[in-house]
Every structure is written in structure tokens, then in C-alpha cells.
Length: 98
Image (cartoon, rainbow, N blue to C red):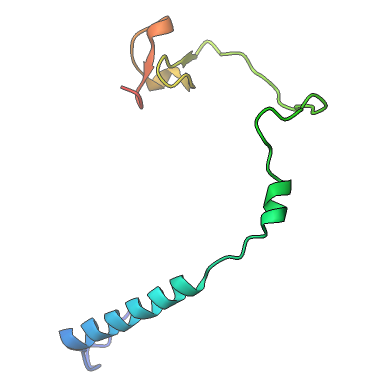
């Protein structure tokens, strides 16, 4: 990007005043952007614990742990063997938990 060195430059005070005005404008915008939530609609989409889900079908394909994967004994997530920090088998710990 070309720079025009002949243009008048702003002083620190002018930059400071502009930034204060921008911050005030942003603060006003942030306060005015409140969202109206329809409580009745939100309640219809809410699933309560213990709800009867016996008629629901899951469409998830479950793949068993592969030879180059392990289960972390702290976070219980399956990671690739390159994420192994220490331990083996049931005592394996991933790099994120170490």
C-alpha cells in the first residue's frame, strides 16, 4: 500500500479525541442492542432432564478405538497416539491433560 507523506498528520490529542468518540459510540451501540427473547418459544424447545426419549432414534455411527488411538484417563477422550504424553493402557494421559 502506498503512503502519501504529504498529507497533514494528526496530533496525539486529535487521535485521542477521535478514539474516545469511537469508544463512546461503540458503548452506546452495545447498550442499545438488547435482544427480546420470547419465553414461550424458548420453553417449547427446552428438553428437561428425565424427559421420555424412548421414541427417539439416534443416527450415529460408532467406530471402536483404533490401534493408533488411546483413551485419556483424565478427560476420557479418544486421541491419536501422537497426543500421548505419558503412561500406557488405562493410565495413558494426553498432552492437554498433562
